[in-house]
Amino acid sequence: MIDRAESDLSVVALAGGVGGARLVDGLHRALPPGALTVVVNTGDDFEHWGLHISPDLDTVMYTLAGLSPEDRGWGIDGDTFRVLVEAERRGIDNWFQLGDRDLITHLSRTAALARGDSLTRVTADLCKTLGVDRPILPMADAPRPTRIVTQGGEDLVFQEWLVKLRAAPAVREVRHEGTCQTTGAVLDALTAADLIVVCPSNPYVSIDPILTLDGVSNLIRSTTAVAVSPILDGKAVKGPLATMLPQIGGREPSAESVAAHYEGLLDGYAVHHGDSFAGTLPLLETNILIQSSNDRLLFACELIEFARSL
Amino acid sequence: MIDRAESDLSVVALAGGVGGARLVDGLHRALPPGALTVVVNTGDDFEHWGLHISPDLDTVMYTLAGLSPEDRGWGIDGDTFRVLVEAERRGIDNWFQLGDRDLITHLSRTAALARGDSLTRVTADLCKTLGVDRPILPMADAPRPTRIVTQGGEDLVFQEWLVKLRAAPAVREVRHEGTCQTTGAVLDALTAADLIVVCPSNPYVSIDPILTLDGVSNLIRSTTAVAVSPILDGKAVKGPLATMLPQIGGREPSAESVAAHYEGLLDGYAVHHGDSFAGTLPLLETNILIQSSNDRLLFACELIEFARSL
Image (cartoon, rainbow over all chains, first blue to last red; front, side, top):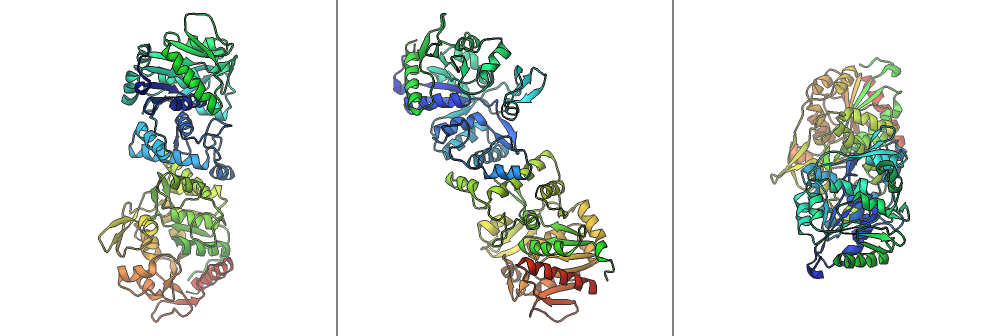
């Protein structure tokens, strides 16, 4: 039972890429300043052109800065690709699309990390240059790369599998390498939280990397936690989740399967109209397709209301 | 006396920035394939946005690739500056102008150096992506940063003094830090050379960094060597040399002063019409203002003819 007044409410959202960013955008407008902290998956982080790329951090950051395109889940709206075209002209690896304006984010981050700044600090500094005033916390400062083991036995960097190979090779297993330590900032935020929101992101590659960090799951269990289904009517709004659920979990692609994946962690669950299922988990059945700015805000308000009722 | 036939001639040019690149462009068209090796100053190299920038290597490389603008001494003709504008928008250091197409050079170089490739190897690979088939050798693989000590006692990175401070602070001393070792490739090229050409570059900050590397001066003394004056009618075609000559050397800004600076190294010297001076050094007095493509080729032919006559 969340009995805090709106002005003192403390909400932590766990987010991956696009779906996470959209809900975070709604929450940040639905909640008073200071109420929201976003913890972002960095399992997708990888190196390209010698630059440290943090796809999910950037998607969340650009969304909160109002810079995200309507029509795609990455980069900056209206960005150009002069550098990328030059890379192509010179026969340099250009499978990962870096825009010209976007590039300065990766350049700044890489230089600051090389100087010894933590990813947490670097992210705060980047947010400042973009006018984003909500705390966005990387789930960890040390690398924790997500690897995709394919049915064929290949062991791939996540972005290579997702972008370069267009998520075509069937997945046998998702592995998390590197650190198991989250940061002090994340632990403090989770400890102080009245409500934890698991965003409609891919559980295997966006949320599990966060949940499997030391201490995180226990803090979620001891707090009111709600999730939003990333599956609507058997399909993922974006990304490869609908095919991964049967491949990895042996489960149907459904809202219920994702709830089963989070078993024991949640106090409530939001599903799309017609996606409800029987059981003891309290459900919010509503429009969870939050593409437009207005739908994001409306849904965020409904979700907070629902969480308060639990 | 150079008695080698044109087809077997081996010429090494020592080059800094613009003036060097222009003469190198003439020489590479005047000489048969395989005859020319360019040794380039890397004392200007520095780090910016976490990238390894090699201004002189790039100027020579872009000039030989036919990519240099007519109207300025750096970067790629017709390049855009989207990334730079974004840096400015975000309040990120943008005093060094990096173009969008130019940027891929610095990204590739930085990533390859981080992988452990030598600057010599990286430069060869970059030349390949640009279709440049003449060997361009960095003077050294390890850093040898040029520092400017001002009359006011400040000790500055060369590019900061030149570009950020527009070469305004008067110079007391030019220092060369870092390695004294050149590379095996440079020593081999100098040893095999029939003719060494000291390009019309700034002696203090473009040529001295090369000359003061172990073994280089001795190899130049034992070979036919000619220089081209970087001073015409008391003025430098580009850059701060005319003010540096009195500040550092206590010398007039003249072709003769530069020859005196190179005392003991040269077998011949090319000066502009009206800039000849008395003494024992053989002079070629001609048009050395080689801005147009045609003037570059004509002058290079004259210079080789002159060197053969020595």
